[in-house]
Length: 270
Image (tube, rainbow, N blue to C red; front, side, top):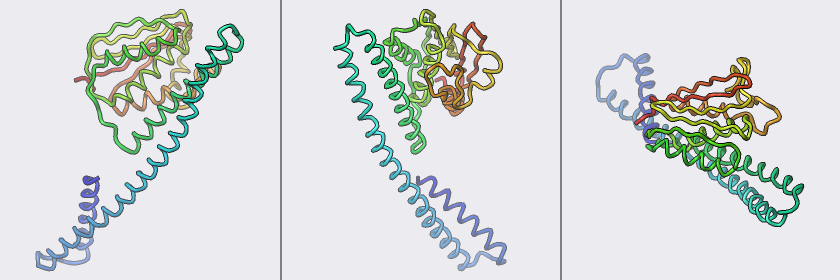
């Protein structure tokens, strides 16, 4: 905030200096020096006042947002807790278990949206600090998390690599890419994840895309398959994040043969 205040002060000072030069043929007199000092003081006061209003607005928005997110988290936690309890009592009722599974899947998607909303709001209000971490270990952790779903198998080929980026944003991006690979692949199809040299590759062997679909894949709310669950904003968020970090993302795909997503990590390697 102090940096912004001093920038505002400098801009105010320069604008008044230019105006004074246009109106008056000045010389370095005591009056001119007094005017310079006065201009700096007024510029600092004006900038402080304007940025304090913005800071108060951001703090109020953050406070309201935290309250709303807290209220959203309560019913979400209740749904998850109760579905787990009910599942134990319905071990022999396959029809009700299937219905319960749908509720559970919906709560998982809702929780994912909740976490992305929290992250996006925090990122808008306060800059997210970059962290140095082992990317190969993060990928292993996320794959283990998806493995709990007992759906697709994962084939990993990970070399040690340290990067410096917004860790939470990277984690969300990896989750989106792995989730998409699982969503558009048969359950018996393996998903390959490679981290070799300066490139991260996530490849599936699912339904794939043609050239027309590839052109639109990064559009927000675009969905490849309307029959699949999702909000159609995952890849748009991945592209937005990668652009902000200087990570080049590219996608190769063939209809009926699968999709390969490649992330060029040269600019974030440590």
